[in-house]
View (cartoon, rainbow, N blue to C red):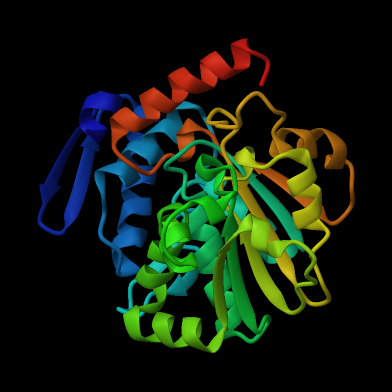
Length: 292
């Protein structure tokens, strides 16, 4: 891939790699290979996505930050390190470490929710917070969960499953279940946040594009002493029936408020299949045309 994109020839001789081609392109190839060696030395496997992303950065003449793919957030219960994988993800992680309230806005596949959960687990393990609260609007049910059959757990599971999955993957089944039973972890629909003050907690609102402005204000004002909030969403995937998005309104109303930070991820930060990047880019182009 590096040879094809940069029009160079890379050969191995003994313990050395030799690069032939125009000097400027050979220098770029050498920088990428050095970065990939650093990734390998850190214990991570080198993926096609890693190589493609580093190539894209160099082709845009953007400086390769030595810590982009090495910034460890936390470790899963299996010992696998979780790290930022793109410049956008690194900026997002740094914002969550620094600011009490962070909005992570971007398309599917950019790791918005998973990275927020990883930061929440890290904060809990370091005793920065004493509990983790995850929520999202059950927009498909209009938040009228009482009309659905079954108990509360059965009703909300389909809407909250991505949050469960992220916690399960990082904490492991036993720790996750134990913390859930103790109330250290709470996963609930947004409607159940009303009237509460949430102290000493790491609170994540997922799928925030599907909140109304009233719901967004309600959520943000639940924040108590010692708490941190992360709000994630994709403004190109609003499912509200004809109403305004609380996430879109929050960008307009809160953009100059100190202590809040908005981080925007793009198709460059998608870490799924290469085709997903092209799909996301097409939707982003359409959203810009509609003024979103």
